[in-house]
Image (tube, rainbow, N blue to C red; front, side):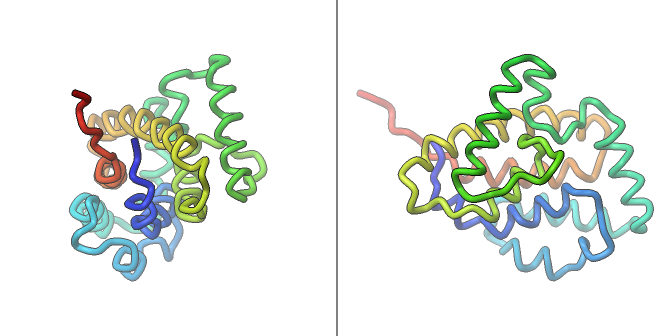
Length: 188
């Protein structure tokens, strides 16, 4: 079960995760973005700062080359969160349809030609959507977070194996989800 209020408290950081997981641009590494999105008490703070520090050692061209080599040319580092579990099976199509419907329910228009399980898009949805007053949010966001947790688990393992700086970014994202998990009391 996900604590939607805690998740909402971290909305700014999801905007940062979305930005950093898209193809890198010149302004993406401005320190102001990092400072706005993460306080020292944020669960992903240490990991994201490690990522940011590592990225400061590279030129923009090197970061762009690394991004493409990592996410575009390594099957095990795909940014499509249902791919790891379903690849191209029929169940994946069903999950993609559910995600697209979820986005539309909360007012997000799908970008032309993009799949709804694209990690930056999922993070952007968490950043942009307003869900606190919606009674369907607990069930819908439970599905969304389950997809994110499963997909990022596989992605994190591949990034670690490849010694990628993006490992720390995805680890920070996962720590954020972990902090929003509601611990259920054991039944008597």
